[in-house]
Image (cartoon, rainbow, N blue to C red; front, side, top):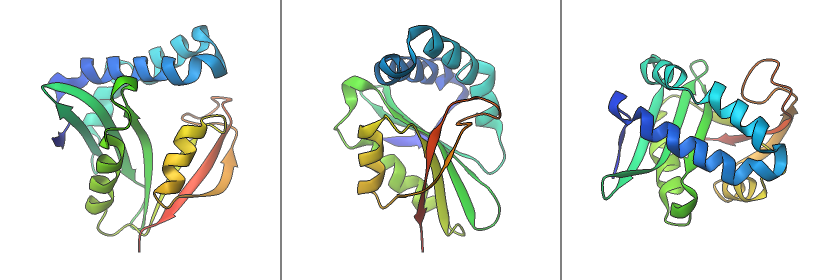
Length: 161
């Protein structure tokens, strides 16, 4: 079941993000750096601000009462949207949650013509996922996720029209 995220979901969403980040990025950035990033980017206050952000889409995929995936997207003007997060718990990958969440978000972006995202170049499985869903590399950034993060990433874009 896909539904909007609730305040009561935030601890489980944080746990999902921390678990997924360690599974995905420990080999790339190291455990200490992943701990620092998840402590900063995925804290409960940060997640609450996302939940309260006007015009944002914050959804979860729930199965058997457990949050197995999440997605967070914002509009960046009348025709542009940005996908900030799409994470599926490592033990739940391959069940279609990511595809369903992405389709749900795209269906809710009535006026947007483009959807962009940032993805770590070394995260080949995420890159393949996005490419299978119509995204193509459109550039790069040296500050993924936050201003002055120092984390390089590829910028992907998808035309929604």
